[in-house]
View 1 (spheres, rainbow, N blue to C red):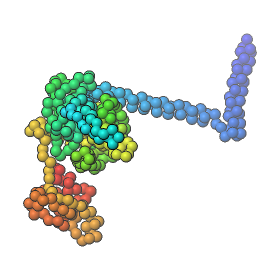
View 2: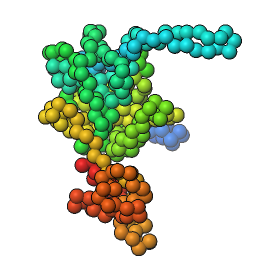
View 3: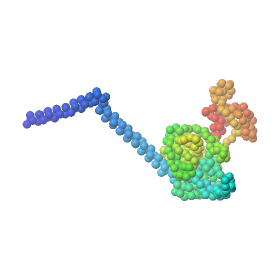
View 4: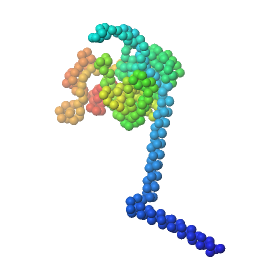
Amino acid sequence: MIRNLNLKGFLIGLSLSAVIVSSAVTGAIADRLFGIKPLDLLLKNNRQLTGIGRVDQRLVNEESTVISVVEKVSPSVVTVAIQTPRRRILEFDPFNGFKSRIEGGKPQDIGTGFIVSGDGLIITNKQVVSDKDATYKVITSDGKEHEVEKISRDPANDLAVLKIGASGLSSVDLGSSDNLKVGQFVIAIGTALGEFRSTVTTGVISGLGRGITAGSIFEGFVERLDDVIQTDAAINPGNSGGPLLNSAGQVIGVNVAVAQGAENIGFAIPVDVVKNALETFDKTGSFASKPFLGVEYQMISKESAITNNVAEGAFVVNIVAGSPAEKAGIKEDDIITKFDGEEIKDGVNDLGTVIRK
């Protein structure tokens, strides 16, 4: 009996050894003939599968973030509609002579806004409500229409505050634009093309501290905006005045413009500008007047100053008649080196930046 057990154990051990040797030989042959190491291949496949899991997890997390932000903020995003007086327009057709058409009289969605207080204060762009002869309505996310009772336009920035007769509204959380980073994930919500309400787009912050010209001379206004946020999140006409959001659902900017003739280049006013304007509005009921010196100037860099043996600062090219600059005795070809005790330096303390402070 003992002998039979030993023989059986011996046979089992021999079989296991054969399997092990066979596996090793097979691996060695595969390595020698084809450069394949089965164990390494197995580990590699395992790593690839693990990597796929990580990628999928990141995608799931991003989707969850967007959905969460949209569900949280959408009730606070509104559509702004304009209604101009109904009038008959005569047009001349060289083939059919004069003919008339009716213009105005019906509300038309033109922009976006967002609620900043439950009692009906809404932020949008000044360009959205620039027509002082028109009346405006606000349509909330639940489809309810509200007449705009009062409009306060900010003369220093492309911002406006609308007041509607409502209470208990859901308001946004205002974040900070102080520590934004290029590459940071952002979400935009707005009425794209003045037609598609509550449109959601995503992207990243593409640049910071940009300077742009908003509006058009053909539309009756041109405005210089400095230190704006550049983003590749799709911003279309109609998105103006809507919120640019971070992944926590906080407003970090107000969508303001899209670069003409370009793709995926949009801009937003930093939310800190909005917060400062709202603080003034809360205290006084209006916005502060725009600071104005009245000079056209060109910055002289440190290198140019050394090369031309002149002071570093703002070189005055022209003086606006009747301006504070003229009254103060500033002349063309002067170089402004300090303003209110602050040194004027190219790329650090531009004259316009210091004046705005």
